[in-house]
Image (cartoon, rainbow, N blue to C red):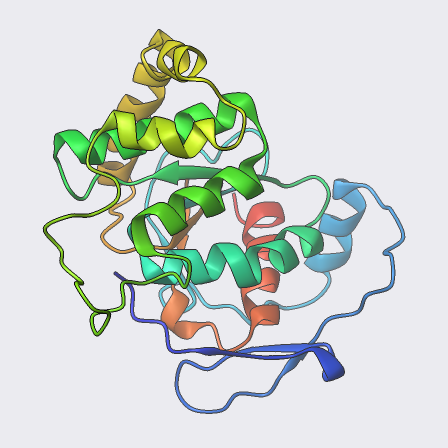
Length: 248
């Protein structure tokens, strides 16, 4: 799991700081609606400005194959990862709202566990992709596995790692049933060829893209963002836009 220190978040200043090595300068994020422009126009404008992001430092090239035909961000994460839950609940909404409109965002679950329950949890994300309501169902899965606070309370009376809330598919189906997805619908999607192909692709890309910690962001199937070099949330958003639109 990638070691990310707490991210300082100050609503009054509309500034978001990822504190990786002490205090960084906050990045201002405006709440004003941006004027809609084409992806091509943004790319031309950005090309006029020398990038502050350096390959090998802020991002790493992880494939010599051609970039994806359309700009996209792929987040590799795990429902078992506390930092992933923080990213999902606190920062992804801001990130997504500040990405260029021509950039798509997708999520993929890693297979670090190599176990039956690990595979079932991966399938749960594939089901979420099909049924929608991702914000609610993602949170429900994070909380079912980690607790409502996003982590296990080791000091809680009766705490044990021997009895996690999610032990099998039936436990996962209970989480979905609480949000209107019945067991038959869940099973049909979870066992579909589409889901099987999706899990196979995630596993292949996990190896191809050298994903060894989460959350990991891959841009255009070609570049991995070095999270330890992101000093502010603004830096993370900027490097995503830069790599998605400029680096091919």
